[in-house]
Length: 200
Image (tube, rainbow, N blue to C red; front, side, top):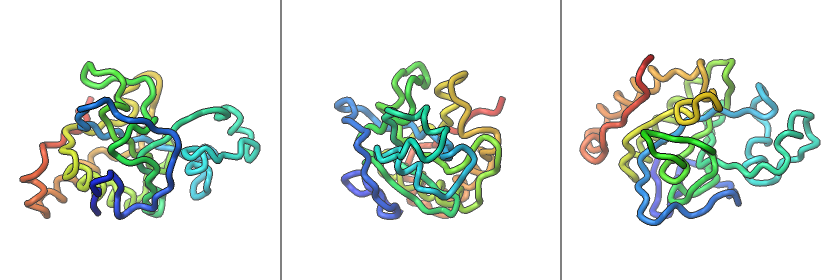
């Protein structure tokens, strides 16, 4: 898996979103933000997440969609339950995924982060293949941008957001990342140490 010079991943299906803008000039991209999403809530496999991120959602398809009317939101990537990877916004651009957020004293996380949505919810475990794809994508992004930190939406918007939720296995993600590093010596030499959330 590789991120090209235009910020698109060769391992993803491209599905362009209109919901993005330019990052501030000279902004370093050093934060990876993990989310979860399902539409309707707790239902997986349908087209609705991609429809939301691309402005095509039929708000009459489910009663819960009424609250989403007029919402302009996107992410860079979406990892489906079966491991399929979709990309909506070039990673060189600013996707609208974090909202009001702060990391390490810096507001407006969208400006310097990449957002990855995992198909899931706060109430069920994620699939093993999703972690494998996430780690491969993390490696590709780290090679391209030299990421320094990874956090959940809950960490950058505490009290407002809870995702990726209690069933997201941060230990598995971190251990799998360390294994990936050991298997790719060149990656160790070309990337910074990636900081994961501290355990409370």
